[in-house]
Amino acid sequence: MFVFSNFLMAFATVVNVVLTIYMWIVIARALISWVSPNLYNPIVQFLHRTTEPVLWRVRRYLPTWGVGIDFSPLVVILILYFLKLFLVRTLIQIAYQWG
Image (cartoon, rainbow, N blue to C red):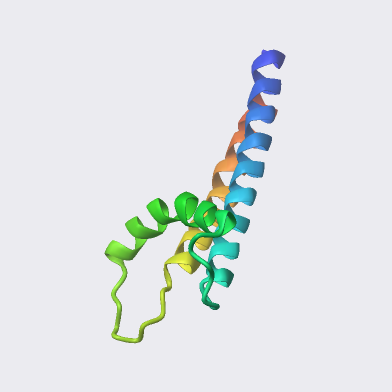
């Protein structure tokens, strides 16, 4: 069972790293949106392509309130943080119980 435990621990670590990297990508996208970026810049295109599918799904359910401020990056960051706290910790605890 220690093999499954080690696999689960490694998987939890990889999930934690992926969630952290994606959270920083969302933060970079939000910061870049405050200025007028060059839409032909490859970095801006990468940030847009990697975050827009998730942000668009969140924007569908958020009310706009007529303010013009996009709160979807904040909601996505909170969801990612919740997943880091709940999912990763749960996987680690399961790995410890099996180990």
